[in-house]
Amino acid sequence: MPLVFLALDDTLLDRSGAFRLWAKGFLDEIGAAQDDLEWLVAVDADGLTSRWDLADLIRERYRLRVSSIDLVDELNGGPQTFERLDPMVGCALEIAGDAGLVPVVVTNGPAEQQDARIRRTGLDRYVADWVISEECGVSKPNPRIFAVAAQRVRMRLAGAWVVGDSPEADIGGAAALGLPSVWLHRGREWVDNRFAPTHAVGNVIQGLSAIMANR
Image (cartoon, rainbow, N blue to C red; front, side, top):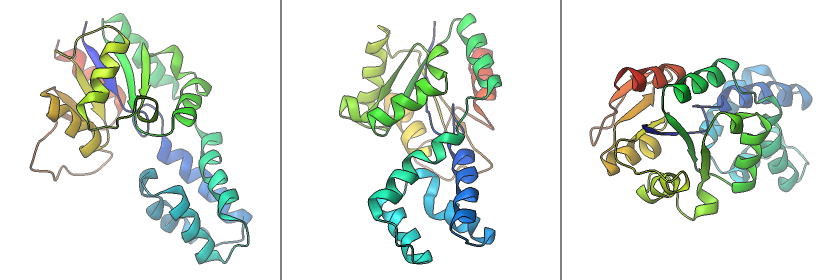
């Protein structure tokens, strides 16, 4: 029964799509041009930009009088109102489970926020468990977080797979452990010459299929 470590953002949940939908509404609300959508998506950097830094950039660009803390709250909560679990992803997880795979979410981020997203979208019904960096004190790509995830479901790391869209956090983590991996390229080219994924696919459904095909 292969253990499969799955990233959350832009792997199991379409975080980028949800942010884009929120950003469109936000720009309308403040009277900004929709041409600024690509700027806002770019400075968000797939969520890697600190929410405080992003709030400052937005306040400065649009000369908003809203407080930074209120804008940070909006940046944290607003996009999540648009977040849904794709039914096809749920179906793929069910098929993978029936085939003997054990899916476990391994994600970086605030524990309360990430836990709420997993439960609110119903993703919790399709995975064996989940591990969040803040709660275990270590982040991807550190191998320890994957070890914690394996312990959580009482399985060994040997034979596990790592699936995710981050070259560093996901594929780098797999490489550090000597585990096979599946990279969700999202239209990008692989450029890191330190390591490489076992497979590169377009989405998590294809990723799970690739793992099942390797059994």
